[in-house]
Image (cartoon, rainbow, N blue to C red):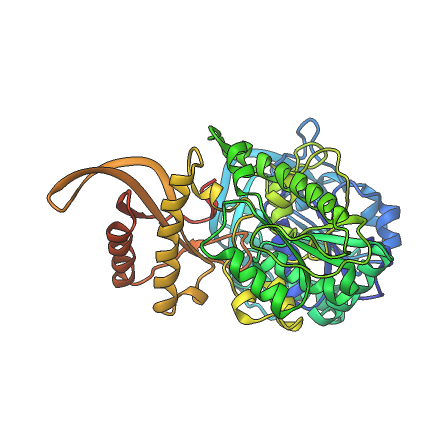
Length: 540
């Protein structure tokens, strides 16, 4: 949605210079019930003024302000009379453009630090004399622009927090948005409420109503097709679109052969029979598996699956058009309902903010590519659909809030996230029917034990990964040489950062014993104790 089309809510704009935490800044602002939106770093000051934000935040980023090709800001933003908060790279840009000095000192400050505060700063009102903060920088401001003064220092930085209150310009060398700065949310609240004078006028209810209006405006009388997986993202997208446009929505559920156990049965029952959403079931498992035969590269897997999804959609729509009796075509194992207009102009997707930040292209954006996502990185260059992405601006926990407000059952809303490429990215190496069967059985054990122990809804994700590693074991006095399963259980708020869960040893033991005893082809289970970062949640 174009920012200028939004109702006149309080609004904070975030200029993105490539930090992996940019989306977290947006999330923290929304937790204040203030609408936030991320825009390109080089957005002209005139366009920003037209958007009428209450304040601007300049994100961090991996570049140095003096690097050739480093992302730069339109200096005109500092003269708009709008409060500006620069974080890390954003602070350095502010100093650089306003006459200060930034250098690479050779003294990298990374990790935890203690911020010593001066008195009198509105940004730190009510926060005492010192704060624990999280640093991540190599460059450093060594001279302030005219009008600025220091409001906070650390052992490694004399200009850790600075401001020019007359022009309402503020800079932080540390990251207030991350959990490792415990009182960072209060800093951002001070900026949003006291400095920018924002009202708490953005709620999930307002988001749903505005999104429905936007979708109706975008779609008009045309029909929309959605690839429904049964996961949280696509399920909430389906419910939101159904609220907005009713029977103009048709969902296509594709069995790509990479699903969890009984997934196709659950999706058809919940959405086709219970919610009466138009649903077409397509069994394309052989089609996907043949395309993946011999492929081991993770990115290639994702691209293949993303491209094949679009082709399956196109074929399914052609199939719908061939139906003579005006009903949704029936593929093996599926059901359907009537379609009055078989022309689908729009393709809906459950793309989320974390999908976008991890898939962003280097060209035109300063962030580094981590991995492509099925919803955003696996699509062909030339598509036959226009995209509808109603939850693109939300984090996972916000999507869950939306799902509850839309009346979806807890079993759907609180399902653990499942990757678009399915089990293909939880099998390291080639995807084969045999390896899929092994992983599917192991994963079923993980889910059943987590549910039985009342841990399933307490964690972000819990799943099995099939490794391309075989090892020696002993079963029934026989020597075995079988596969290894890695167990991944993590906690997170929004998927941007995660930590491994310290679940009881007894539960780990039950999971391991059951997998080794019940899943043919596995004789070893290992537990992944890495956090994100440096690791990602999925292994591929």
